[in-house]
Length: 349
Ligand code: NAD
Ligand code: DAU
Image (cartoon, rainbow, N blue to C red; front, side, top):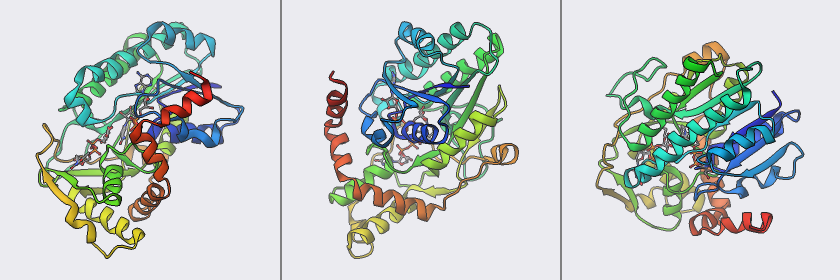
């Protein structure tokens, strides 16, 4: 495989995946396809934008004809599909845009790959990046495995579950070579400050309230984004066609405990007295349909493909907080919408 289409490469996880592939595989050409929604920011990839094996394509995965032409224009033989609407709270307010991008957009890409590859699937791969939220919620114990039945509860997870089913249906029906991974909550640099960790870091810095949903007792399994990118690399190159791989950190945190770690880390780095910002904690109405607990069993990925998380959580969270404190301009740009100017200045549109 040589020409790899990475969708959603200007977003949080996508930008880490694009950087890893551009730097690690000079023999590949990486095409980063992104429509640049509020969550897509080309500034995330400033350091690699001039590399000879990298091209940015501004396009919408919902544009069926465009997707068909991109496969032939660039002779695409591998796809890593990350483009999506990704925020649960937004999906509660506007489920339609989630169905459009996550379901129909994915279907467009599948159809375009099938048409262009025309049944010659030698050295071709369609890799679909999905979420553990498709499995629903756990009680106090147990883990999601690759065999856990789908049971999505939010419009976001329902749209991702639907896209996973379409991907599998293309494998079963047309033999399209596919692989799927379902990952737990990611954290790290370049995450849009609407998700828990970057939102709370930003609010602590600005002495703004920290809106904790419900009692803060929900549990998430956190994974450093670079470890997710490494897992995607391993699965793309060594994963078995037709298989699913769960990716997680074996790193569960109750929200309220995690929030206290974030507060402690930010206060320390800002030179505030320990725990000073705990007074910002504000319990608010719970998220509708809020899943109680996610926990991933990623032993298949470890045992079969040799992947493991590389970073301890304490180190990862400190790195993440430092990044946000040192990149205040990035946060200001993405929250004000100014980052769009970067694209306009570069591409003259
Ligand atoms: P993100 O919201 O940060 O980025 C999404 C990217 O997709 C953005 O660059 C956006 O511009 C682009 N995009 C959106 N709609 C598009 C369209 N119609 N056409 C082209 N591009 C479009 O999301 P993220 O957190 O980086 O998540 C990336 C993928 O990983 C998603 O598929 C998500 O479901 C999955 N995932 C995320 C997490 C997580 O914790 N963030 C965990 C597991 C899986
Ligand atoms: O599990 C993987 C998923 O993780 C990904 O598929 C999603 O794209 C990603 O957004 C993430 O979903 P969550 O809903 O778990 O992440 P979020 O950061 O929105 O919320 C984490 C937890 O924190 C959740 O229990 C809700 C809670 N929360 C969130 C926000 C934004 C709050 O208490 N207050 C908040 O303001």
